[in-house]
Length: 83
Image (cartoon, rainbow, N blue to C red; front, top):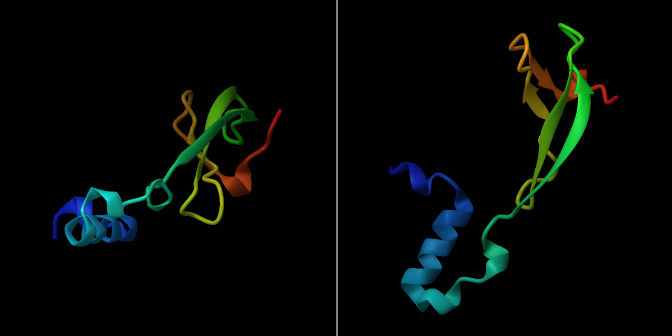
């Protein structure tokens, strides 16, 4: 299966395009991403840096994940500490 068909919303949108034409696709069907920046501290090397948080409207919670630019440590939500 082609990679662009892996997400359910894309399959649904393509099905509606083929069935109803482009008028059948609404903007509510397409995902939107809200982003904001938080100032965090890396638990590995204690470097302070700005991390971008992503909130996708088709997911129930935001993505708190960031790779430290100094040491490469993967900071997940459980280790997230804001400054």
